[in-house]
Length: 312
Image 1 (cartoon, rainbow, N blue to C red):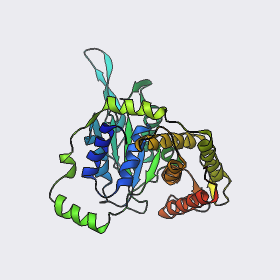
Image 2 (cartoon, rainbow, N blue to C red; image 1 turned 45 degrees about the vertical axis):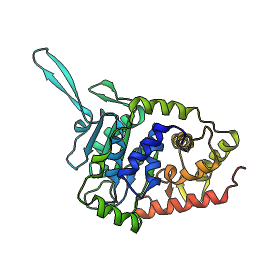
Image 3 (cartoon, one colour; image 1 turned 30 degrees about the vertical axis):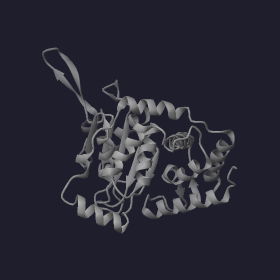
Image 4 (cartoon, rainbow, N blue to C red; image 1 turned 60 degrees about the horizontal axis):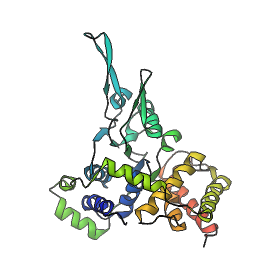
């Protein structure tokens, strides 16, 4: 990581979210690639802490939306209010109008409200009452979801999942890290100590540099071979779409930049196959979005990596 400010940004996030560097790197990869990230796991593993840490280390606007079964699309996007004095409607923006938006427990709300995020996540804008409103730049959604088996959850539809660049389960920290967290942070909020070390303009500059990261033809051939393999696998009923492939490509560039390189390598590709593809493919006979589907998809993708020759 050659950029000192980017290094400081990562360190600030890691200071509050300890023991899971891979999760921190995925969140920053999505941010640099103009994407969104979905963290899923049981409650209490730090999903919200990680999202808040990213926002706290960034001197930019932040909003948290706690998704519940009674949340309405207007609670997310905003609403037009009639001004009698002017005889006109004024738009009151909702919490989606922020640089970093934490969609906490996104699968606890109804599909109608979930769909309110689609345009925002795809195009960086929202349409309310036939008027289009641009969102701040940069714009990133960090969503958390609980396992489907938990009470009061609604499975995210395929169209919603496809808007997330990366998905991963955080898991529990190792015993040593967990012991340290319990003893040192048990009575405090770890995010409260995080101070902004970067601005929205810094992120925009990083994103522009990510676009310039080289992906040589031999690495691009490897990317395309992996995408094609998901569509041809006898174990998958649905492979990666073109939109998914584009998202995968951008994430590869962002990871290379995060590693301090101006070019992508096969290692970047392999590191992102599962988080970039596992939520975009479906195992035959397992279309319920359960943990079994997620784990089996990851295993099949790992086998695909092993089966394809790695460029040298």
